[in-house]
View 1: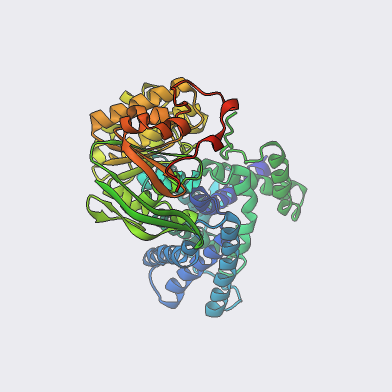
View 2: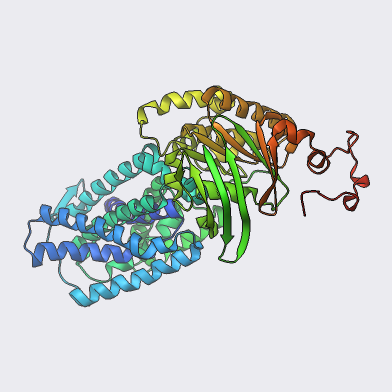
Length: 290
Length: 264
């Protein structure tokens, strides 16, 4: 029973980290129908930026985090301006290919600046273990949950109630019609990329705090893929619930069946879910009027 | 209010669609722009509203003046802010947004955010059915309701000039009547000037003050709605009536018997 509780809590915490990463995918997809394959690299960049500010510039953790987020916003806006804006109106598949190219460029830049060797990450969130009943959880995981929940609520409110949020969903639905409303597609895309870069930087920092800073953080971006597809690419609650499901599945299979299998299970579940609900658990249903 | 002078539009750098089109829309009027398929009616609207760019089109010659200011090849956002709003062909509501969110999207460029709730009530006043469905996803509305939503969404921007592209497309005759009555009401009550593109010439001339007939990217005939409705050629080719005024069956139509006199 203790083992079950321990696995459950571990699963939930990993799941929340997944959810946070998934939110980055969701915000880009929701506004532009583009799957951003560079999301993982954005996490790496975020983590390295924080590392640089803390270790190489010697800033205190809070100031370093603020600086990282600031640079992330700039990075997001720059990417939109230089890479995606020339592609407005082009087929979605070209845009997706561009994000793959972008991920290679970011990877190369990180390698050029910080080298390919992973480095230990300064402890900017305490890693000490906290006991919850009989289970033991590292504190940084709990903080990750809090941060992910905060972003979840923020994003949900943003999409439902703000002018830019509604504009974002309008653009995803029908770009030309959105243009005819006077909605500035350029501006909305810039906002979306800035938000995605920020959430990637936060997720990257949290993950780096757990596993150290290095290129393999990007691999997590790929691991999160089943999460986003499972939850529905355009659903904020879907990202969270998908994250929790995958996190729990990984923990249970890892704990009861064996390590290694937990890397495969998410994709098997993904296949099964897609057979029944091709748009994910919470994705928007394609409306067909007959 | 709106003036088009010898406007030329080219798509993809090669296809000339508007070949020196000139027309004028006066403040407070309903102006009908009629013509067959492919005459360039929608292109004309898009040239005015700045929506040519996504279709790779461009105004290459002539000028479009709105309240005296040139607006050709400006960004759609600037044109909406200047007071021109196009209701696109085929309704184009945001399917996954609720009715209310669609209306909010229409109000995107408004600076006076406080009055938006009041304007929304006015839209519900014009279209009571929208009020009942305000929290429903727009994709599940019927075609007529979607057209109403599209017009309501335009009202939310409080435009000075509303461009309507075939509001009757694919709708039942009864609904079309209803929508045209509302267009007339909007023109009278809000003082919104309206440029109406239609294939259904009878209906359009029924509510319009002035009309233009387009063919092959040019205006070939213009006049008050009454003059056009009584013009022999218009009757023959757009209203489907013979010279004696009786309805013509398609079997009897022999176009070679009578040439459109405006085609030189």
